[in-house]
Image (cartoon, rainbow, N blue to C red; front, top):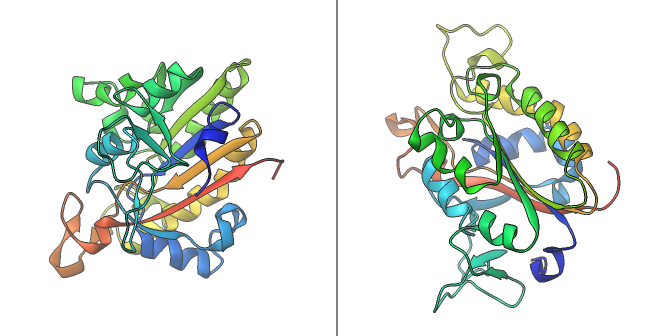
Length: 268
């Protein structure tokens, strides 16, 4: 575990949530050489197997933005990277950056960071009070339909907005959340030859990950150095396992997610 007391204040921070990405699909894709850009930056070329803090986007992001990132699957306790001040916490260790605020963006803002969210799925769309709750934690937030789940080029559009954000960040340290919508249903259009009638499948989910991989190198290149990066999923999703489809259920394919953390210190 990195010592976050040394990183906070000296590094920009990037949290990329690959919304709905399953661990098994992520690891199989990496082992098969289908996600070469992610393989270049994920330490050891292997995703860490972790348990999500929630079974759907809102619950999981609310937890992550309070410091509860996905938890290692082996027995703990496991010290966390970030933790709000909380008496009796068993997961706040010497390397944990603790903050006296109700959420991580507020804590980082008090530490001098400019906090920005570039949303993807509907819980970030700012079209309703609920869709404004998570973006409202940040000093600056962005969403438009081209970032959302129905856009085949959503990640590219999000990266264009990130380029604008980084260009005007100035001397302030930056905490950036990018919620990537591409893996979330509908994703059938990422699979060559698939049609709407064909519907979403495990194969189209994997094809969506390959789409993300083709562009994630540009996102990382845009970030200023040094930058501490977490790339993870917020939850998985079912494609017929044990009769289940979707998420917000207590199934292994929903709770088990990929996770990676690393420091960008030089150009890719």
